[in-house]
Amino acid sequence: MADELEERRDGEVDAATAKRSPSGIFAQPESARADSGLAQTIERVGALAAAHAGPDDVVSGIIVSEQRAGQRVCLCSFDDADGRRSWLAIRNDGAPVTSRAELRAAVSIAALCEVAEDAAGGGDLDALIATLVEIRETEAPPGIEDTEEAARALRTVLGDPPQVASATRLDEIGAATRRLERELDSAASSPFAAALKSSQGAVSELEREIEAGYRIELT
Image (cartoon, rainbow, N blue to C red; front, top):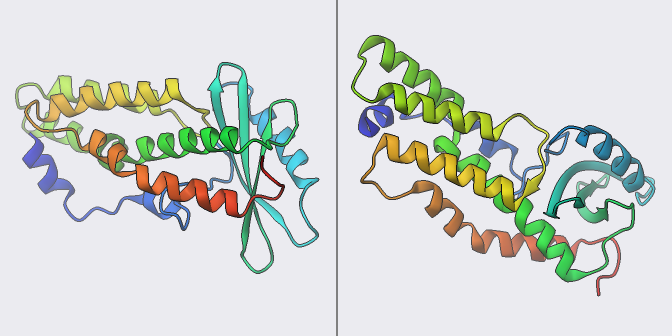
């Protein structure tokens, strides 16, 4: 099953890659990622972030990270007229984050969720589901229904943006992805786990990049 899928998908471009930042890992979506009510949070935080912007700055992205239930930190990026990027993290109560440790925790979970979303299902889950449907309808190999069900379950877990980046979300994506990987090839190692493991260096580099471009002093 896995070999056949690989042949059918050979040469496809991972569209998610084009949305990553220069760090190669952290997306800057127009609307940050969400549960119900997050749109209002993004709008409110966007207005708060704009108050910290200079005359030539644009708030270019907002990503919402949640370390504990109800304790959210919004990572806001600013781009100036020359394309230089700076950052500010804002808490749920509207106060800017000044703690280096708190900022790093928010960046880490947001970046890991981004990696998980990109790696889930091989990077283009909708294309994978379409391929599974085609195989089921034309060849109907044993187990194809279970594989398609696992792919659709993962698609449900991923949802549509915006979403909140959290440890719970990361675990849910991991569990649904591993289920799909086992259906595709029960003997193979996990590409998803490998992607998360290999991302650690990039996550650390991103933390340094954001700290270097942070708009206020960190303690």
